[in-house]
Image (cartoon, rainbow, N blue to C red; front, side, top):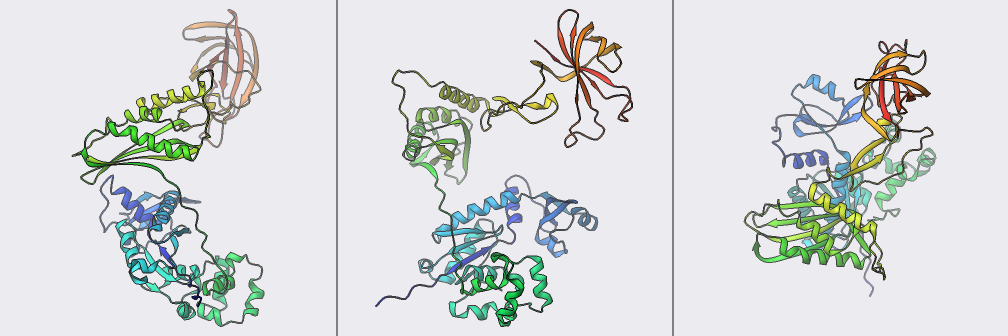
Length: 514
């Protein structure tokens, strides 16, 4: 006799205070948190200034709501404590939580920006039943500093609605699905504001009322809506009348090498070679190379210390990695000793297997990359820099110094006019002794030396960058000037007479030609 197919069981975990929980967890590691009686809000930038993105329990008790302007709330509550929100960091945390939740089942996926979905079909009995599974989830989320509401239902849509609009810990059986969904408001469906207003005007305030309306009458109203915002299709999916599979992404592979020690030790250096060889072996089998590494030691007192490092070029050479790691262990406090070390490749890139040259010649690009890695590891990322090009009209903004590791060298912007090889930053003001009308100075003094202009070329006008410069910034007229002794300078006049942005124009020397 063939057993009946097992019905799907989906768990929805909703984190209504995810942003505040994450802020509280990260801030507590750096400084003292405000008291529970202080209203705390997280703000994001809105069209008319900062708006409230999240609020703590004390603020909610005072009636502070998300979406309100911070200045308006501060006028009512002078003791309001404002912090900057990080929505992208919240989503990144939710992605990590979704991967970590695979301890309960193999299929998990992020649900929007505040929840995750888990397909626990056939897995509940491993944790003592469905009720025990939900209790275990709630407790473990709380241990991570996250307050969660969980619900279990036969479909993902129903589980999602029970977690957000249900009362208590909901476990819905397949035969009770329609009855359990009936009292929920229509706002439980992921609808847009216009569709929700239309249903409210029609008097359809609950899912039960929506189920009782003839299908043909409503289908004519919503047939032009997209599938993901059509209330009838969403309701059919929640009731299991249409398929709504849980498409979970594949598990992110971790490139990690571990060294478990029989007893605590103080010096990690003797164990680094084995770690580097183990990690490079994993990368070689996958034809990948590491770009970012993290060395972590776990002390016997429960604390841990980590050191990050970046590579200029993807590598899986154990000797090269060992040289980088040896300089990172000097400042680590081992405490009373540690019994576990890990070396993880945080970022990898494809790196095909290759054979060294038969003529014995070295690859110059690999040697330069290894040199950059060693210098950065020893001196720090802010000490080893190179030039990067940026789009800008002003010459002094075109070039910027960026860390050599983690940045990409791009081609310089195309310039139709000749530029001097040497620029003075900042430009140096010159004293004009005699100026040609609408032209460069005929005589000028720079660094206490007077110069006589023999010939010139220009002007080249460069307007202010209104999206960067402050209001009132004056334009520049650049001139290529050759003086009587043969030297060539790059001068500019800042402003013109009558521009309404200051007094008389000022002259500056900005560059020297070869």
